[in-house]
Amino acid sequence: QVRLVESGGGLVQPGGSLRLSCAPSGSIGSISSMAWWRQGPGKPRELVAVITSNNYTDYAGFVKGRFTISRDNAKNTLYLEMNNLNPEDTAAYLCKFHTLTPPHLYWGDGTQVTVSS
Image (cartoon, rainbow, N blue to C red; front, side):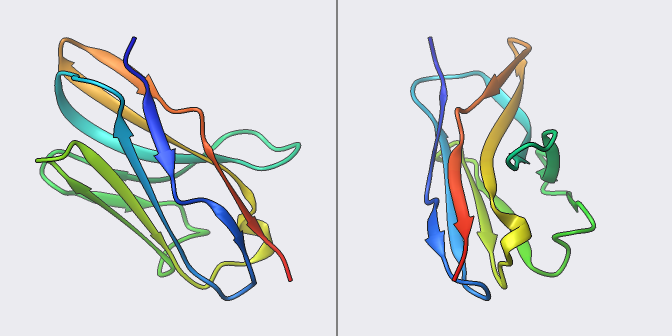
């Protein structure tokens, strides 16, 4: 079964940067929207950013101006550039793909981002 695989997480100091990546473990259908979600300790899962097939992007208010979502359609890969990180950004970051043909939602297992001095 195809899964999404995230990478790029780690421990970073406040004010630092990380770049996350997400790609499928195998072949999947035509991808429409891609998104990053996150879930901090003891918190509900929340949407971070989304990018559509025509590269329309939208961000949660708490990351606007700091994070940038992008995609490489040739590689079926999703990215999240995160700058000026703060401790409140500590969470597991998960990616989600929505395919149209066939219609399916794919989730990754998450990559941990920890912001601490």
